[in-house]
Length: 224
Image: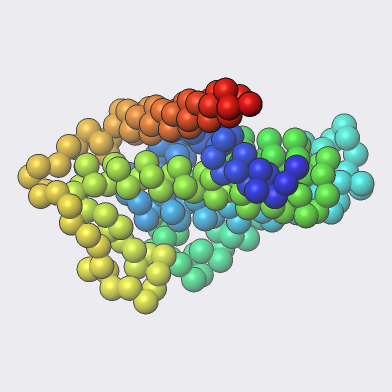
């Protein structure tokens, strides 16, 4: 498989959040604003990439019958290290993400990719798979978080200083007046609604692209 197709499949065609619908609990809970979505997405990407790489390197030493408990030890150790780093260097982000950092251990995407890809593939493929699946999930969370933040709070990128220390806490954009916001967007039902609309829009784009490709094939065949 070509690198472009490999990445496209994981980032868009088979996106873990918009197509496979895996790990939706943190996706819905932490997308009340764009910054929290980016923070959790990047953290998950780091965990996916590191665990995929370690499991791929150690796959010949991991007995098949007890591979799942070993995955959990590797994943939980990685999550603990990243949690301690966030606590030390990005305390504001650490406080915002809260309990959802240790809950990454239970994210079915992590163990799923470990068993489906890392345990059977080379280090390079496992490494790229971790990055691309993580970035695909981050992209989905960022879109959902941006929509919910704009509709629910009227702002965009509020709290950017939690990720980028060089920014001031007053750095954010205001799109809607506070009195005109839709509170439902930042509540749990709003998360489901926005996720549904984003999935529908993605399916519309994919379907439209298929129609264009079919028309091109039809005209090329007609010319022949």
